[in-house]
Length: 283
Length: 161
Image 1 (cartoon, chains in turn red, yellow):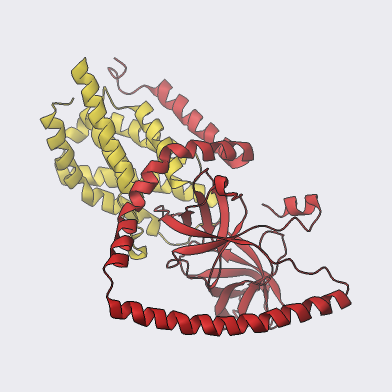
Image 2 (spheres, one colour):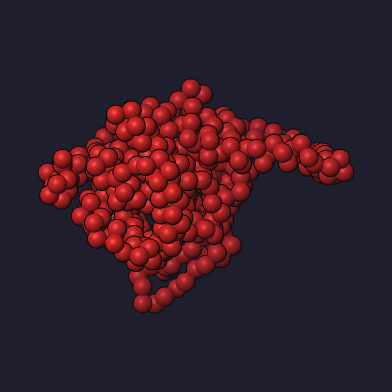
């Protein structure tokens, strides 16, 4: 019997060392994380099981919906589609004009990003991290680092991929940072998540910066991970405290992080930056 | 022998249930109100059947939980091993305590678990500035009597020790 004289201290120490070793490996080795995504297959049935009630409820609400609601929704969608079509027409003209002007300026023309529609299949229950699971995985060509968007703006980025599912870290996660710029002034900064589900922060903004409540921040495309020009956040609070060297700025995400059931995974364009540069920005 | 194996299967089954419970989605308002199910089930079985469920179980469960949560691999393995070790030190005393008092010790153990997670969050990013992360400890303590009664009945039915 192992436990005659209390628990085995040697075994305890051994397992603690093993756990610390695994943690160190996880934090330092990208290869290890890659391997882990395959081991994740073990746990995939559990994640599908957990998502089942939500899927069932969705199906039921699809089936038992009244005719009048459907007609109303149909009408609304039709008008929306018309409006959007009209806007697309305008856009096409503008894009053409933009390309011509850019060509005149001798600048590289912007590449239209391809997107894949993914469905949310689970939300990470761990309150320490803000992550969601989607139904596309490496079999669908998803790779680590792809940005995720919804109709409102940037939601986050793919941080791990298993063959059938992938995991998206939301921009409110405390590990997340997105390079942005303000459209009004062109001011560049980095939006940081702080672990609150509905607030973001801008750090180290000098007190003389022109930034106001209501400013919308768009991705700046710097760092090479997020494509340029998608809305990220709207500034909600700017505090100028003479006692502090920097402004205290809070913002809310423009994407509906807790409500979107569908999200777009953007195919990453071929790296525009030299290899070393894009590697340096991956951290 | 066959009986012993059947018992281990039942214990393993309860752990699967705890993993399932730990993954169930909750509304944002309640995100900190989830008891640490896996930890609660683990401590119960360490108390009830210390010769079957020990540190290896804790380590393995921790790794499974890490996979399911997608955080840093090994973190739950570390914290659950630590908690199981403490439970092994305490279980003879804890068996004598009334349920509410057991709940308080469970809350302390869960608090330790949460603290480890909080530190790890600080190591890999920034961490929040609120003490909300200790709330699961309170809820685990409150849920303990319920789980104890449920698992106790199960263990008695199948005569597990």
